Image (cartoon, rainbow, N blue to C red; front, side, top):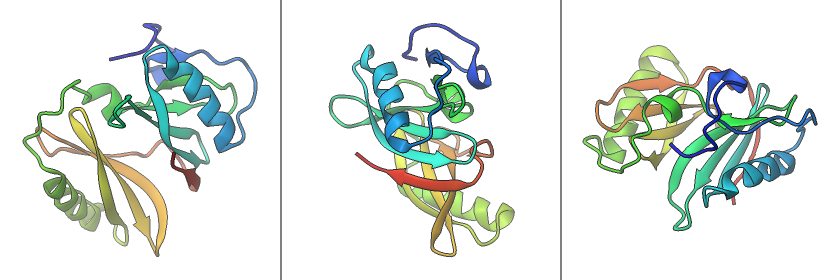
Length: 168
């Protein structure tokens, strides 16, 4: 994985940028923190989502491919690798036994069995897994990931309530 090699901090993940104690209250502020954190690795933020517990930021390489996911802590500004799939399933390569269409089918079955009323959106491919936004009643409510090798599902419970998003 990329990053500065420090561990600990927010949710025990790799810390890309330690907190500076300054609150992060907007998507623009979260994007700025993630930009600073990712620059040394040659990455840039793509989609930024604001949730009640954190800001989620997709990191992309120079070609525009999604490479990792980080969280920005709103109370400290710390930027750390998102817990769950970004830490556990990111293989660094794009070989996948599970296709994007299969990932959506797996996610749909899982949501029907476990989160009635939620539907799976379009998958975003990361090295080793897919991340999929979930919706209910026409609005975004959360996200989940599907392992690209095994089809295992990981629902993201740590975000809290969806507030807003911006894609770049």
